[in-house]
Length: 609
Ligand code: F6R
Image (cartoon, rainbow, N blue to C red; front, side):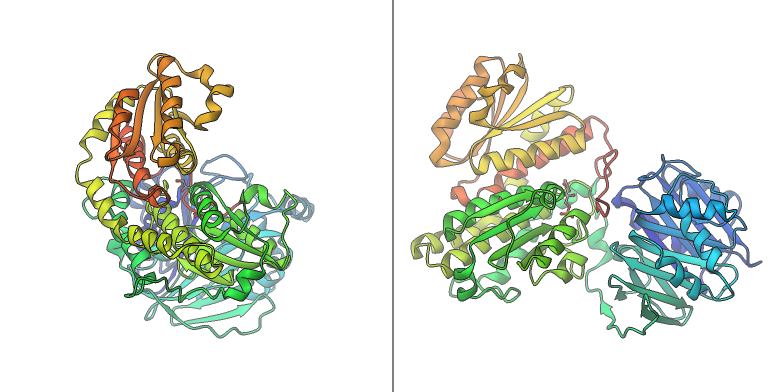
């Protein structure tokens, strides 16, 4: 979603702003802009629809000079993508400029009030009320005017503010939308995400909700919205920018697919002890607590939800605890059965997804204990959950989630085993077997990735198709949902996932001669039934691309193409069998000339509801 960068120091701020915004491009955006306090103490504001390159072109033609500035990449919510609606927004006399992530829910009322006072509005955005309100309250003290302004705002807002009347400072504000402060020497930074500043500093303040900061060149002061000083520890970033760059691959998506053996190793191995047991130092669920709960909820969005539904089947199987699942955008409005005997598990790569965060907060309010499966350390979800099981996938930049999914599933396998043991519902033999299988996953993924030529070949046959179906049973159906999501988001081919047994209750009518039907047949206990479903599709002309385990050669009789993954227990197969589906989507997208890492209309971190 939208990205924010701010700079105050001795460098030409335009360079820092553009560099920072480039690092946030992966979040998805449709326009970009900057406001720099120039050497004549005027605000030089440039903004343009489209890619950052358009803005850069603009700032190269007529140079922007100045050491203080703010920048933004916008993903349209209120008002179409256009130069006019791009940020920064400013008041009519152009002395205050603001960039904003989030949504101001009461902007219509505020706008009417300001229009009555004589303010003019140039854009259709909710954001424009903010610089106008600051101007309205400004009586010589910018901080005071900002405090009065944010007291009037309802909704979510991360803000960076600059004013020519207070030329030695930037103000940052955070409510329900992430914002960090980078601390340098003789320079300081604002950003909506760490990669934007990591080229300049590794020392970060993570602003909490309800906090704001005043940045000067050589000082940062943090306070709450009432102005009370907040003492904060500097957080040191240990990961490298190289990890967040392409490292020789054509796209982040393929790089991240190939990073999965490491991501899985990093997620699994610290949790398995030498004597083959599970150690979860990071979560604190006791036997007494687990035996006292009556259900678990797993709530998430998109790919993270697809990992969650695999988690549901494993937890129910090993721990015999009922698990309800819901997508976060529906959960809150579905009258969820949450009480103090509910364990609420939320799953999120970014840790900032607005709906997931809201679901977490609602569950807490209703007395549930909350556990997050999350990838981004220090993110809002990671900080607000009672317990946190990190996936150690490293930064995921491509909009299409790949290594986050496999590590989330691995985290659920670990959790299900752990809960199974705590509740005495899993036999030692099963526990030890699955644990052993879990440790071999990284090398099995490496094996799959050694030769991807067959998938490229199949991808060539799919580039012109308009509909693709994914079918499976049990965990294979869970994977079909994820495979289908991956295909549609990066290739723009229409795709649907079906429980294989459901097909003949309606959707089978859509199968025509040559319709690609990706059929997952990895579950031993459902194999024969799955073969029958594949035959039903084949009999109607469907083109069957089967995914099965090595050794299941009989599948060849019912399929046009077969992709084998290494043999593994049914319960740990998801992180393996999903890899060919990720690769297939990637290669089809490349062959169709799609913008693989930044699919149209999508954003990496969905921080609005
Ligand atoms: C799809 C994808 C999305 C995310 C979803 C949740 O490839 O990436 O469906 O999984 O937006 O995001 P997080 O996990 O950051 O909460």
